[in-house]
Length: 511
Image (cartoon, rainbow, N blue to C red; front, top):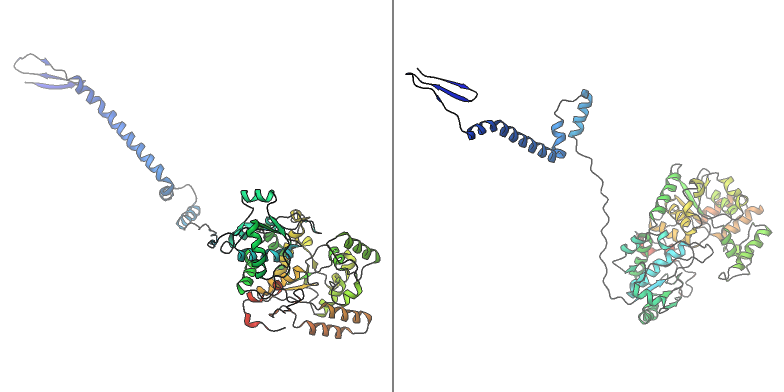
């Protein structure tokens, strides 16, 4: 009878019939295979697990939160519920500010390069820039970004890009005219060698003057420098497309820098918090009085000081001025005392905020006393803002004027006391914005009525009634520009009344 047992992997076989026992050993390969099986299984399992981990890591950013949200959490039930609710919500979209598409470039044969040096204050230069763009467009030349006046009374070192958004100026007009920040290098070298022509164009000229007289000079010299730019293009008698381009530059392409725009918006918000406001463009600064020779209400010492200033500036050609006669003709800016009476006569509410858009008032608190007594809510940018807000604007009169310009546009009422460049340009801009209320004062009549009231020969009720009736139709409504062919200085100023660009020309009436 045989039997089989296993011990230590060695099989022992017993046979019956008294046969001898045999000892049989397995091969070495068989033993090795038997021992490797568990290790192969473990290695394979490890590789598979590692592969799974790597795959989960790769997609974890996308799928991880969805897997984990179903796992048990140590958070409280309300917290877990809030997290689950938040996970089901769509992500908040990130606002994308899309830039307006640029207009296509206008392709034209370049006749040369036009350099311009603007003269005067901010708004005189603003109007000049508009005119120079038009001239460059219709002469098919390349305009170099205008140079601003740094040598006038204000002595403002600001460059174009310190006041206006130069990139917007260039790109917004690319479908009309090519504008460069500076001359190309080879052309710049010619200018540095004096190979260009410089001249002042004739005032109040039409487009034919520039085509017939100026264009040949540009073709000859390649670079022309216009060293004066104020009032060098006519008000009237120009093609409609010329007038419309002037408006486009003024109302769209000449944006102030983002810093000026933001500060202007802040001033407007501060004013709006307290209700409606009136902007008073009180042209009673020292330079205005010295230039005009108007000394009404000044002391003898103050009048002498103004005279000395007028003689100190050679480009102010008129030296001997009769202040009394000039005031009677309505050619002087109204004084703070006179404008206080006018505002009261027009029934401007005493609680109205009066924002003074001007520099330092000559005579200070003494001359402002009548106005602040009648209207206690008189404010300025310097009183609304912190000194640190205006730190970078100090000694930059054009940048300060830009702030006043923005506030003037948004005011409920705009009242200029003199018809200077800012008064005219703001008037025209407010017409373009929908004929916003702008009180255009008849200074000659006001002076006459004020003198009668102050002398006691006219009672208040009569004075107030006459002021109201005279100005009933002087509120910035639609009207036609006056045309005086042989006296362009005396006719209607284009930038004060750009009638060709107003939204509803059917409203125009003959004034």
